[in-house]
Image (tube, rainbow, N blue to C red; front, side, top):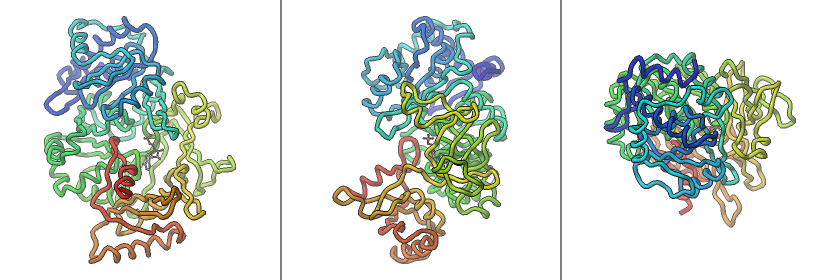
Length: 503
Ligand code: AMP
């Protein structure tokens, strides 16, 4: 069955089941179908082409209505979170050629040279075209784009990753088959829709008749509100970045007592540290902790492993798992040959999860994408190695700096720092003097320890990593904090840290 049919069937069988809950608002499966059909009918009448449509907002329930309406009317959607600056939104509009922006944001909407339908216009459309729907053949299918997510490009220009209906189908089938998900579960939705981690809960929840419990960025900024909402949620499946879970772990009551129904943690997007996973397994003994890995360009994630007690004991740096069945992972060496088991190289993903490329950017697409044995392949720019089919992530290849003539990867240093018994989280920042890198600063969230002075802690950490890294890669300065700040997507915010320490 196609994705949209799978979602719509819940409207027929369980029309009053909530599909989405955000603060005091909720949207049922019945409403999701009625409103998205009506809006799709309007879109199909107004836009007789396949240009993508921007959807602007944050966690409003109508965001889902807009996403489904676009694809029912044969258009891909581009989620644009309210935290994205206006100038970047303009560039997204230009690059995508969008002619329409649906804006259920409910607040002031950015001024763009694109027709905008705000919340009040959307509500008019829902009521005017109630009981109307476009022909189902019009909906996106196969190799048509389903959504386009803009990620940051190294040139500063956002790149639009095109995810087709079949890419998404392959991802959702894997999630529903391999992650022990049940029908009608409550899923946490923490990531903004413009970050593809949100897709990990959005579609698995909608095709299984689940309920998405949305946490917005204001709640995340006010821990009291956040934990009150979590305590009320009945969440069974948790999807977030490891950074977000680490932030929650700072609250002592964040445990099975607060979330008694929680059975599955799904992590993606950055390194899941052994310490964080260990703490979660102690606080949530009934929940499975799943580490997954993948870039937006390969539809959210392509590898998976349950982080069991054995895995925690066996690997200080956790593996990111085994590849989903319909895809393959190759480790490519610099000379273009495929690495042997255990040898380090670039992670290349091959198979139906891989995107068609960046919208309207053939040169960028050609650089990062290729075809291997007739299948689409994406060169991730991530370093890694495979042992017995198990993938290990080893930092970004392009995260290299030269310090005093030595080439080094900051994430490799972080990776080793995290193996220290005294380190819970670590970010390494290169500090410049007169436009040249001068020294490395390690920002550390320490584990509990009995040292009285910071310098004692520092020398204990240095001693441990000294056995793993050459001297020139050991940070000169160490700074201790109780947490690492997060970006709007929930990943460690390096830029903010750097501006704080250099201010
Ligand atoms: P994004 O496209 O924003 O999801 O970022 C994808 C990148 O996040 C990957 O290319 C990796 O560098 C990193 N990443 C994703 N999952 C993991 C993971 N489980 N462990 C470490 N890094 C990860």
